[in-house]
Image (cartoon, rainbow, N blue to C red):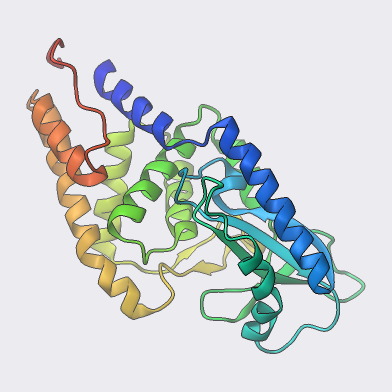
Length: 282
């Protein structure tokens, strides 16, 4: 990849990343949610930050603040009932000015029994079923395999595209797909990485994928809340695969103007343009 293409991706990634001021506001927002939970009388054992903000993959202004709220007491059969307990606290801190896409609270319960592990909880999946989960495992895995930051940048790029084109696709699903690719092959370049992911998902369809950070490494992650929502996103996915392949082919042809056009079609006009003073790629 030419230095110039690498540079425009780095520039765009810098636009996507949270600023220190965003994180200060985020900390205040988290504190407001915890305070609201305490005042509501919800029996909270602990609150764990998870998701994109915890993994340093958040897209500022759009990624939600994900908090796993571990509750005390017997676990209700219905995940919806557990979510109702947290509804008032989520409404109390919407996060309009915190540089996030709001607050998302996930109820959790400790796994009972003498052999229970302290970091293991159960949370509801997208279908409302209780599944075992380790909130910190995803961050540990990413820290181990992302020694140069390329994986986190790839995730931010996928999320930026998702928020613009296919919001029904789960952010956790896209992050999982990026991690699985990183485990299979080291990053070559953001352009090629994106093209391979979108082409693979377009060819195979939005099928559940195994989460390598789940207990046992075998729990399947669904692409969307329902099959219908996944089908709705298929066209946007096919279009992304086509545009990314077009950008790759344009790069091979030495046409950076066309590369830029394809990338702006994918990410919007905020994606940086190439400078006029440049040398063609070899």
